[in-house]
Length: 112
Image 1 (cartoon, rainbow, N blue to C red):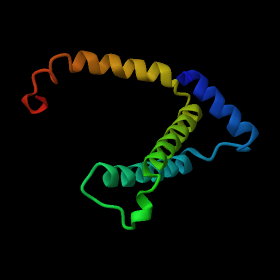
Image 2 (cartoon, rainbow, N blue to C red):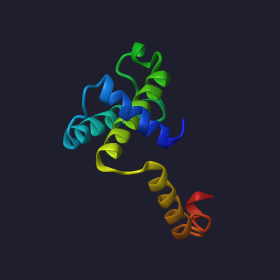
Image 3 (cartoon, rainbow, N blue to C red):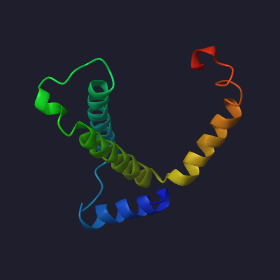
Image 4 (cartoon, rainbow, N blue to C red):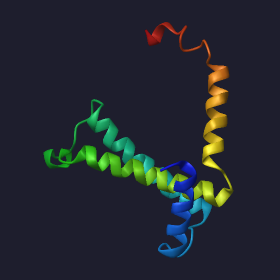
């Protein structure tokens, strides 16, 4: 699914099943909460922190996938609400990074 199609699909879902968008500030709070859930899983799957209970590790990779999708969903909601075309925004951001970091990472000894 392309980003534009994702924005249209989420908008349709919100207006037919979700009834309406939450306010931008409410969605910001939800986004932060969802990012926290991604963080919790990543620190346990890839960092030094362990799961509190062994059964919490079961299906953790699938949960990570679902939590990342939650982040994307809410981010798309916020883009729709604020008039941001994510395809255009991402392309501009990649162009900016390409110009700014053309030699930066290649010349960084920490990345070797």
